[in-house]
Length: 182
Image 1 (cartoon, rainbow, N blue to C red):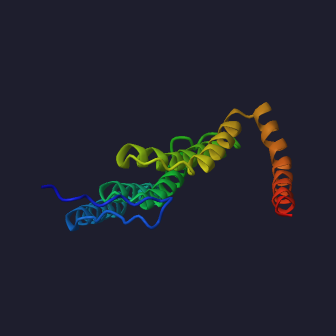
Image 2 (image 1 turned 90 degrees about the vertical axis):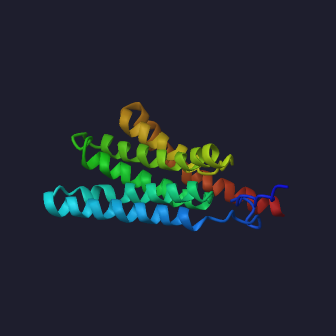
């Protein structure tokens, strides 16, 4: 006879209990984070590479993602994806893409940040067989803005027009909500 397995936590239904995370898995994630952090700080002190500052957020994001995947906790994917996106964007614009002119540098950062949001949905689907769709909204918005900034020219004209229009769209949505209630 097999024992029933606990259901995975569902971000859209908080009443669903989260699957327990074994002490061994928590120890593996925590131990790995401490080892990588210690090695990064050691290399920084010995070689003065300034890598610790550039790699801190991507490594922290990766740790949250690993923790969430190993313990089957989709809520941990959210800070993981966001931190990894911000960290990767910072690393890219301060490192390999540092020679880009503005607004392309800002566009590269936004593309990486948007990819971090998309990673939340992808990791939940691949590793937990859950569809968490809402991160696709900010990820898509940041991706479109970043792409427009990288392309420049007419794409930036569209972004500038959207910059004027979106507050009016909020007003229209607000009025619709108020008037619909009456």
